[in-house]
Image 1 (cartoon, helix red, strand yellow):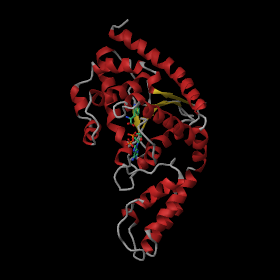
Image 2 (cartoon, protein in one colour):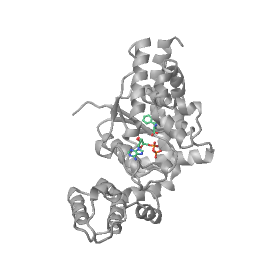
Image 3 (cartoon, helix red, strand yellow):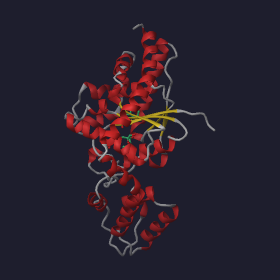
Image 4 (cartoon, protein in one colour):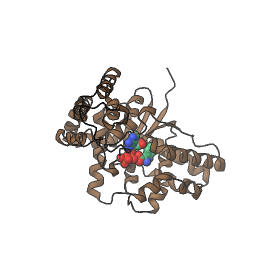
Length: 324
Ligand code: ADP
Ligand code: TRP
């Protein structure tokens, strides 16, 4: 058996999660949980850069936790926790910020994207990648599974760790990125990257009526039903490929090419697949929504375990920089 690796990843509690989050990031957590030591958290400090309402932040925090548990993350195998239960990352973030060149942050596209979308250009948003580096480095993580939009942040983390090690000695582990190539960027209903903030998402835990609406709203061209169509130019087909078997995918592609098969037909098939694929998860989701005490208990247990590791690393770092 391959050696156990330490895996770490987090998702911001900034609203409903969608199938882009699932196929880009969360599915990787599921793939990794049996054979590795996984730390999966809810990045609520990071979410403060875009949410300034306490009820909303807390509701969204539980929403991510319920998502994690519903899709099948097993709290017996995975350490699930809230970022803010380990305030030690904020201290590490400060220490790392003192070795982080400004230019490294200035090059980050996510900051520019977010301010272009109207998020306040705060210092927290600018320094976001340093806190993310602290999240990763404090647990001495080997592998960080994420979607491709987080690639640059993991590269920044590596640069910061190297800079720290060059300054104070080889203390920090340099993490590797893990991206699922086939699902690195899941398209939204308009063909752009699926994202909460573009309002182009399909959420696997929406009620059936909303989910149906999201699927029916997938943008298609105006080729008439009878005419042959190019499957590779269609968002419905692109999303269907995430859920269907090889044979089913070929069959849908054939139907497109033959003609006499409309986008409405394809959407119905896609909806059926989503409901089927997430059937068990959706049941579990409804159950957990009514059992928040359990969800909070899982997060508290996870935090206790994560805190031990974080404290050990922070102690080494404090010693190394002279903060004894
Ligand atoms: P959003 O863009 O909806 O705000 P987040 O930035 O909170 O999503 O992303 C959480 C995780 O999900 C990250 O690992 C991110 O890379 C992944 N992810 C988000 N959207 C997609 C997508 N459309 N395709 C693939 N992965 C995605
Ligand atoms: N920036 C990530 C996102 O927007 C969330 C995140 C915070 C994260 N800290 C992390 C991801 C550490 C991986 C590792 O999705």
